[in-house]
Image (cartoon, rainbow, N blue to C red; front, side):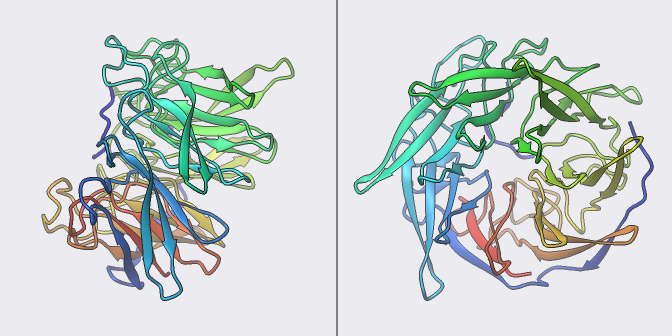
Amino acid sequence: MKSNLRFPSVLGLGIVLAIASSAYASPFKVIYTFGTSGSSDASLPGGGLIMDGAGNLYGTAVGGGAHGGGTVFELTPSANGDWTEKVIYSFSGIADGGGPLGGVVLDAKGNLYGTTQQGGMFNSSTCSVGCGVVFELVPSETGWTERLLHTFTGGTDGGTPDNALILDDKGNLYGTTYNGGAGDCTYGCGVVFELVRTEQWSENVLHSFEGNPDDGANPASALVFDGSGNLFGTTVNGGHTFLGGGAPGTVFELTAASDGTWNEAIIHNFCSNYDCSDGNLPEAGVTLRGNRIYGTTINGGGAGPYGGVYELAQTASGWQLTASAFDLTNGAQPMAPVLLHGELQYGVTQQGGIVNGACGLYPNGNGVVFEVAQNKQALNETVLYSFTGGNDGCGPTGGLVADAAGNLYGTTFNGGSSGSGVAFEVTP
């Protein structure tokens, strides 16, 4: 079964990655150090942040909380630039869920929705630490109340969801599970599911992954909608096997049919060798703009086993891929999707940058915040910040979010003065 803590067909390539600058190019600020208030504080934030209309940030952490089962937290800015953190829910790790690794999503009424990869129903044959849940947090004057929307069994309904959900315009929820389903993988190849908003909520499995050679396996990222209501995502495993090694993941699309079923199309099968130009193991989901798909891979990329950034453009002859590699100095192993802001892409890598051994879990560097600008046939990367592994944190794994002024916000999974990670702000 997948660990609850994450550490660590090639088409024409026309984009070259170049380092435009190095560490400390942009103002950086730690806005909160997790673990500050002790063991009951949030610890090890692995998912991305979201921002509400008032500028408050929300996220999840796999550890900490009143029961040690992980938390949902809120970060509130003040007029003087300081931030205040509040744990709004502590998971028990039992029936109400535990170890939330994905972020949360906010609806128009201010309710939060998310998943936990543990807790819920305990099934020794598929998920001994619990198969995970989908939860809703409802705010009131006295605090936040959890409501369980679905408890996974680890069977055909899926199990071990470790990513954020998305909402459609009717308030229905969509997500993926890493395990479960009907596929022929050890613990199931995972599913794409919908939770229909009713008084009791009901789950529909839209697709059950089957694994290689014809399908992906083990989706580890959130989904995205295009303008036509089609769903896009990635699987970290499965797909066609290339060059005699492994099944290195896919990019897929799900399209709704008139009878209510969903049809899957594999947009791209990644190459399995570490030196393949397109990379492999897409741990992160994708970002869409027009007829283009943007994403990252944690391995491969052509410069070594450091991963890269890719773009898929829809053409008359199919999806055309261009990709660029990280080379350790400018980052390594991006686990989060890129953020499109204006004409630029922003993201983080879990490793790479400054290699100083300060963060023992990351021997290949403490991670970076990067910016990518496309200039004709080149992707010009700027390293906005390289983490030192000290009080500034290390190992960012969640995606970035931007405010109206273009300031970027994210978290590191480790580091900080308490060793439990930090929340940070970067001004490009």
